[in-house]
Amino acid sequence: MATIYSDVSRTFSEYLLLPNLTTKDCLPEKVDLAAPITKFSKGEEPSIRLNIPIVSAIMQSVSNDTLAIALAKCGGLSFIYGSQSIEDQVEMVRKVKKHKSGFVVSDSNVSVNHTLRDVLAIKEKTGHSTIAVTNDGTANGKLLGIVTGRDYRLSRDSLDKKVADFMTPFEDLIVGYVGITLSEANDIIWEHKLNSLPIIDKDQRLHYLVFRKDYEEHKQNPLQLMDSKKRLMVGAGINTRDYNERVPALLEAEVDILCVDSSDGYTEFQRKTIETIKEKYPEVRIGGGNVVDREAFMYLVEAGADFVKVGIGGGSICITREQKGIGRGQASAVIEVAEARNEYYEKTGIYIPICSDGGIVHDYHITLALAMGADFVMMGRYFARFDESPTKKVKRGGSFVKEYWGEGSNRARNWQRYDLGGNAYLRFEEGVDSYVPYAGKLKDNLDVTLSKMKATMSSCGARSISELHENARLVLVSSTSLIEGGAHDVILKESEY
Ligand code: IMP
Image (cartoon, rainbow, N blue to C red):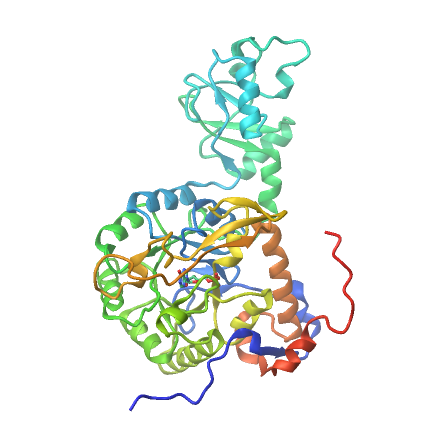
């Protein structure tokens, strides 16, 4: 006879947090959102700790190098999608690891033989007014000069004037040398009242430009998630098929952490994948998933997972529950797995972080997931809305939207994520292709989300996620009280924005 659970499968919107006493030392600005992402023993530190408890989904429409850089600058982490060729995924990881905050590879370059007309065309295309002049017109050629708006007068100069005749030549430039720190570069910028500083090597080849404005922006990102060599951190999704080739290539590119990307992680394939990788590369950090109950959680813990991802069928683009009838309300899944995690910690002294993946609709859902025991959350829809996500921004019915499609949709064709060991193709869709409202810059939106999370935690008397785990009090809401929770019984004025 099948087992029938008496507990209802519940989701985030069915719960609310009760406020606890807020003490004077628990104001929102005192709340620390750092979270472990890798397992650790009692009394020890995890090898990687996120500065904010948020990671971006392993999806084509979400996590590329641009989004990974923007999120790591804010203290979170992206898992670059694995449903692309090994070379392309490695290249994205490399770009994140090579990104030096404040050090920009010049994207506007000319040679001395170009003309003012060419300079104006490049300026129009890139929007940048600092243009490097190199021997071959490339970003890494020998630096011969710089052109900025101060070097020409459109009302007087002919458009055919050669760059050589109006650039500021190398002899008159102040430069820095490779190896210089950002703060040293900034000192030179201030001392000489510059707007930018070219960074060259001993052969005079251009490597980067450092801009005055970027340094200020850098200082606004005190939570940047960096490795021991001060490079941004990045993760990557892998599958249970080609890991023997994909993993070494990603490690070569110095990826910080891996995650097996699977819609159902309770499989022998996933266990073998994690065990094999751990055996070959004991230093590698690797997460597993997805699971929705204690048995599956323990299975992946025993396989050696450093963290476990929770969630089946709750993603905004997900139709797994409709197609296959499997899954569990995200809240119920997180609560049960968190209980299993805590019991395991009591018994062994080993703490396994868990990630709530999918189904976050409102910002407060993130704090609810944490209160229920998650250490961090993974989101797709949330990030797909931003400038930095890889997809097209299009106008629909008077407002802008961005494309967002599931990994199990025909568009992504990520059959490995849904494959349970059969043939190498997607038999039926488990995800949809959709739009999400365009929301602007990642940092602007994330700042608001984090402020809301800190305000909630302050109300709950929690200065950290572990205090929230300890002290949160949650209640179930009735469907009628849900109506009470929004604006009601008033005539709303139309928004002016
Ligand atoms: P969201 O944040 O609610 O949009 O959910 C994102 C999560 O949905 C991802 O991290 C995946 O776990 C899951 N997901 C991604 N693509 C699909 C799909 O096509 N079908 C089902 N689940 C998906």
